[in-house]
Length: 126
Image (cartoon, rainbow, N blue to C red; front, side, top):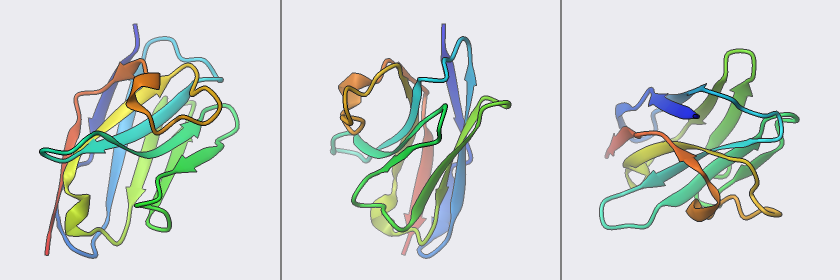
């Protein structure tokens, strides 16, 4: 059974940075994808970024392009999300997720992800 645990959230001022981490336990295949989603109160869960573990190919959401980097350390079974130039609208609960297949690029759809962490809160003040 795969388990995901996020860390690194917190409160920052606009323009600041945070680095989120996700630690994976259980059996993970090189062909799996890891992703980050976020959900603000009253809003739908939004895909932020995703990475294919064996070749580090990445996908980024339009709302964060240029401000976000996703990376992985396969040996440590960790995935990272570097958030830069944070804005108040980035405030949300951030979730780590794992998928065996994103079906040709539908990574941004929460329904293609099989495993989820509990989330870590990011709050950006103006």
